[in-house]
Length: 304
Ligand SMILES: C[S@@+](CC[C@H](N)C(=O)[O-])C[C@H]1O[C@@H](n2cnc3c(N)ncnc32)[C@H](O)[C@@H]1O
Image (cartoon, rainbow, N blue to C red):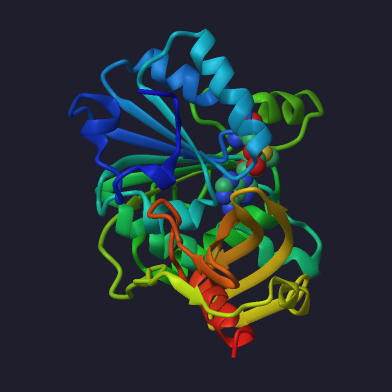
């Protein structure tokens, strides 16, 4: 099995046994960066499995190479946004430990909405972590630390292992590149450990739709110009046709799709079945969220 998971092609939610070829417990790191923390853990605990999630393609590709070079077979990496990963890929109550080392603090007031570790994150995480399982977070930012403590507290789902919510030292905890950097500058480091005490009542999901092929009869492809570059919003989704290219096999549509926190660029193909009659088939591997539905409805609207 490859280290990097092409999640669109796999059964969802993931089946750990198929990915790791064993029934060992699964731990997860969100935002693995260069992958060194996962590698350290996986080497220390060869009887556990490690899933790494990061939304940076650059880090994803780099970390795959590093893990491959180290010949480690209990790590799998996936390139996807973290909340979307939990909702689409990670089976319910299946993680023992969830690590987040140096999450981006987004210190400016206008960027606070970008912080990953908000109440919603801890609610969603509580659906994927086993009862008694733990979330372990390390940050150098005292403001983000206090924000996290408030958000966790507001869920009533997690117990902190420390009286004041965090500790300045956690023995034997592996120090990543960020930790080494901040320590060399004498910055404080804060460790938080939360144990899951109960499941949330709320349900979170990214809905999938059954989407039929779209037949565009007597369609003039130059109409695509009308929607190119336009941002189309519907419910919690966004879609934008970035561009289109005429190819031998049809017209390639480059589309930006966003459903909740799941975003991706997708190439879709319009093929000509007979003169001026076109068909758009959404391949099985495409996650058919509301954005895909909105896109197909928009194309049908163009054809009216
Ligand atoms: C500051 S770096 C820390 C990297 C690593 N954990 C370390 O300590 O060296 C934050 C990492 O989190 C990833 N990240 C931030 N927000 C994310 C999200 N919502 N979903 C997935 N990855 C995310 C970034 O791409 C980056 O790799």
